[in-house]
Amino acid sequence: MNLLTKTKKELGLIGVFALSTGAVLSSGFFLLPSLATQMAGPAVILSYLIAGLLLIPPMLCKIELGTAMPKSGGVYYFLDRSLGPMVGTIGGCGIWLALLLKAGFALVGMSAYLQIFMPSGMGDSWFTLIALGLLVLFTGLNILGAKKTAMMQIVFVSILLLLLFWFLATGSMDIVNNYDVKSQNFDNFFKSPSGSGNFLAAAGLVFLSYAGITKVISVAGEIKNPERNLPLGLFISIGMAVVIYVVGLTVMVGVSGVGFGEGGFITTDTAGTHTNYTPVATVAAQITGSNTGLYIMGFAGILGFLAVANAGILSASRYPLAMSKDHLLPRFLNQVDKKGTPIIGIVLSYCFPRPTENCKTCKCVPTVNVRPVVLVRHRHEGNQARFL
Image (cartoon, rainbow, N blue to C red; front, top):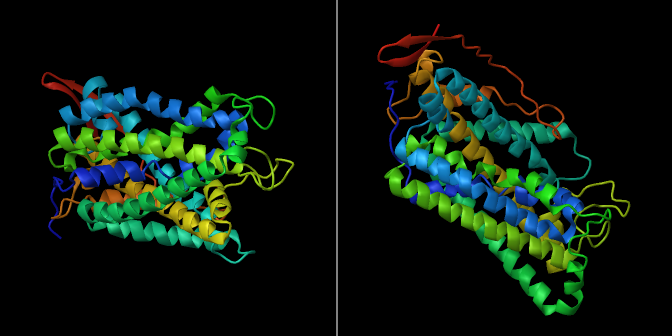
């Protein structure tokens, strides 16, 4: 294998859009609405809107940095060049692990929607095996290169958006056609099922739903014409995400209401003790009046989590590469193949996040343990950090 040290620019505008959009339309839309609505009631719609608006200023900052310094490694590179190698190392390792955990959580969280299609009574070990199999699949896909990874991401996001638009359209029509009844679901707008709504606290919870949108900056060094494609792709993504979240939550509240138990999407029991982790599929079933909607949006939920996992592995693998280029990690992590793919970084990222036997939680199993020792030496040419 001919090993090089430079990645190739293979991602266009559509690839940037697919990677950033696919990274936000998963747990924030398919899992969190039940939890957020318990806190805010119908005002959860405002919570998602506020959270989306709050993301815009930091996103603009990252876009500015990403277009000025279009390098693989994203936030690590910005921190290292502005605050020095020590801060860069801490930030780079932290963000790398955060991206890995997010990808692992996506594969684990997907189990809630997999259960729709699986026979009842299946143990957690089956879902763990499925998650591990998908982890191997996406790792292999990423090894083939960023271009093929982006192509698969485009397929995931295209089908996902098509299904989401169906959900938004049919749900909106259901509310309009039954407006006299459905409008009552928006009564006591700022009151939650528990008696007191706090839509600002819920906004803090759902803010994480949008956080993955800037993941694509981690691969800025592989984007064609980043001065145009990076900001344009992110602006389209954030606009699309806010519309889907706000209209989607309006549909959920309007169709089902915010009560506990049968007819609502928050919990599966009237006591409010068992949270419903498939709220979108539940509402879709009510819209169609059959399990057709349940299966359609169940499939959409699985696609959403797959897109997050795919984008997460791609983004995370660039951090060891960038840190190795600056001699903060062993030099062998700096190597890429003839297609410009950091195979070693991808494999290392695969080895770290592993779903545990209990598929309802995600823990990091350090099967590969890398503990870099960093010595910062000051030179006249500038501050340099060397891995020892």
